[in-house]
Length: 415
Image (cartoon, rainbow, N blue to C red; front, side):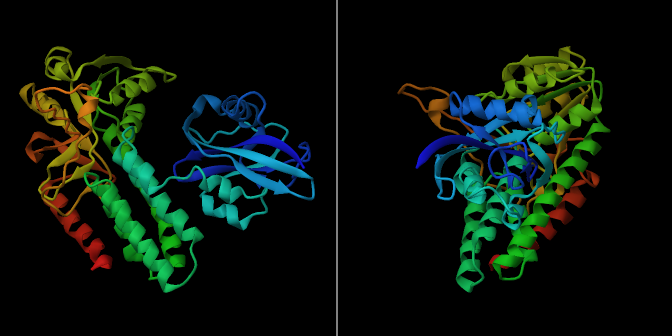
């Protein structure tokens, strides 16, 4: 049996992946659905990027998330053993430019794979790079809106694979608890997972339907919150860390200047500055060290401080990346408006949450006769913000408290 190496790339936009129906121009499996795929000429990494460029014209918008272990797929009718190298990419746009190998394409949530005639073992190939509890727990590069969507995808995908018995629902409920515990500082993960389980009957089928709806709802809410935040942004904005909602707001607002704190120790702000600076019509972008935030707000005519929120507590306080409180204090000192932007799903029932810390070695690698502190998140009091911007507009402290009470009810499924 001949052995041939191929790559299969899943491009993800929000909760959807790109599926392509293969045209008669391809030599294998015409008419069937698959990902972006082709022979692994050169290295698999090189082949994956080439196929994305050649088949759909999206290489410039695609960022690799992960690759998976190769799958060995035997096709006895063809006398071929395919060695499939799976890849997952995040894609910033859905504007596909298909070549002659593509008969049609669709952006769909992955469970739709099982409803189509596909190339062999396409679902297993996707599962090799799909998000897991471990990837949700270990994601230090993205904000909580992104991470919570990945958590919903874990629940959605597992519900797709389960049976219909009581034990299968119990396994999904246990998975939901694991997802909530994976990111204790990100209240949106718990809220969105709780909503799925509270809306579902005690069956895997209803969990799947609620998770599919939850993914769509999450993307819609985050987009509407970003659009509302764009309305309050001034011409010269300071931000920190990495929030997809903040990035979307800044792209819509089109300020003349953006100042980005690097956000140590992971320095995710550097990536934000690069993304803004590489836009088609970029603002003037400046990157600063975290300790310079007060100076920048006071001396660079900043008129808005805009930050994300990993959680908003029931008393209106905002839990976000360390450095948020200093930025908010600097804004108050200089009489500058400071807003947090997030969906309502980030409002949590508690007045306090467990704050995550990173590994000490991220700050100081060697052993030392002193303690190394590396807090990742901090609590910033409500009084330092002009408001919390959501999909429903700017919430007052009283409105935050009401939303928190509603979210407390969502956890009733687990009582």
